[in-house]
Image (cartoon, rainbow, N blue to C red; front, side, top):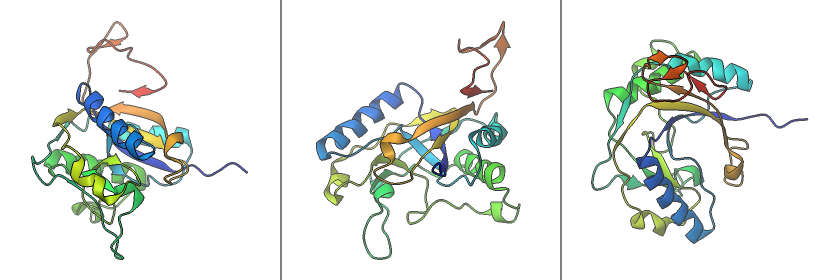
Length: 209
């Protein structure tokens, strides 16, 4: 029987900041023999059950919800989530926490409504993943605690795309297998002669507009 897929919804990092963050993540991972992933802020760690086609269709609801400024405090942004027993979970063992802006909350709530069908009452408050319960960009996975103090704060950026990733299995060992299913623009594009105004083809299997 095929393994059940685990889907997550991510806010992607644009260039040139993506390259800077990815290089720092790779350096930390290589130094400790750890896996790494595409840089992202997690909008939904668990997007619910469904097929890839169903996840892609739900992602389309995020099209045009608006770009998201991702700004990190110059000190204290890099930290770790702490479980009740005092340990750090492998997937929040080194994270950078951005400022919780109205735009970030809006994207988070749009994802919850699209993928989970949450009620208006539930959407009145944020519901970021425990134990940190804040938006976060993972800089390393499964790292030793002492690594956190050595990591630089990521540069600020404005996110203009979100994506569904298959995070299967949702474990430290599974990180190298994580892959993008689909992505969507958070900002409206003008289509001219079959191309977006940034030069990309307007229609493809991996990009929704």
